[in-house]
Image (cartoon, rainbow, N blue to C red):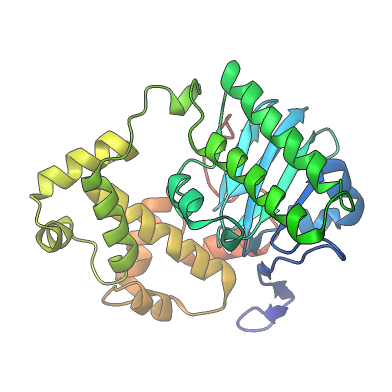
Length: 312
C-alpha cells in the first residue's frame, strides 16, 4: 500500500505488515530455511526495505557478515551470532549476498506456554543479538542443525507427530537462545532480571501512553522511585526515566513509520499535551524532527537509527 505525501508529490510506501504464511504441505506455525533459500524466493528490494512481521525471526549466522536492522537500529552480525527479532518490531535485511546461515520463522503460539514463559519470548526489551561462544555456541548450532534437519524430513512421520517434534526441537533452540551461558559482550556478567524490574517493565508497557513520570509507576507498584531506578539500571543499564522515554520514542518511531497520522494525532496517542511538546521531545531524544524521521525511513534509507554502525 502506498500513500501520497501531504501536499502531493511522489507516493511513498508504507512499511509493510507481514503475516506468517506456512509453505504448502508444511505444519503451520513454523518454517526453517537457509539464507540462500530466502534470497532465491524473496525480492531483495522487499527484504531491504522496512517491514513489520507478525512472527518471530531467529537467525544464526554461519559465515560472512550481515547487517540487520531491528526497530530502526542496525546490528552487525558475524559468524556464530544469533539474532532474534520479535513480532511487531520493524526490521529490514542488509545485503544477503555474502552471508550464510539458517533462519527460523515461528508464531508465538507454536510453542507451549511453559517454554514461552521460560524463554521470555514476549520480552521486547531483550537484546536482539546474542553472542554465544565456546560450548554455548556449539549447543546452539546443534539445536539449529536438528531443527533444520527435522523440518526437511517431511514424510518420515505423520504430519501431527512431525509437528510435535518440531515444537520440541524449537523449544530447545529458543531456550538456548534466551539463556546463552558463556555469552560474550553485552551478555557477559548480566544478572537475571529481578521482580522489581519485571513489574516496572510490564507497567511501562501498559502505561507509557498515559504517564512518563517515574513517580506515577512507583506509586502504583508500591516502590520508592529510587528503587525502580536502581532495579532498572541493574538490569537494563539505564535509569527508570530513561527506560520510559526510550519506550515512548520507539512507539513514536513506529507510528511515524507506519502511517500518515499528523504530529498532533501521534502526540495525543502518546499522552503529550500538544504537537509542539511531542516534537520537542522527539527531536531532543533523536536529533531529528518527527517529519525528518518519517521522510528518512519512508525514503528507503538503509540507516535511520543515527550514530555509527557497530557490531551488535
